[in-house]
Image (tube, rainbow, N blue to C red; front, side, top):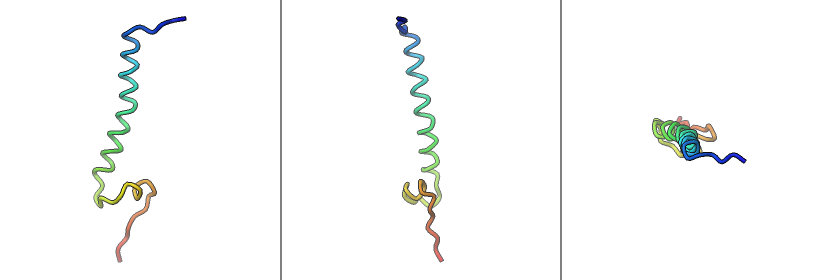
Length: 52
C-alpha cells in the first residue's frame, strides 16, 4: 500500500484549509456587510422586516 509522503500530506492539508476557509470568509463578509444588521436567521430564511 502506498504511504503518502510529508509533502503530499502538507499540500493536502493546505488545500483542505483553503476549501474550508474561503467559503467561511465569504459568508462572514456577506453577513458583516448587511445594511440592516438583523439576525442571522433572517438572512438564512430570506425574511425581511418591513416598516409601514
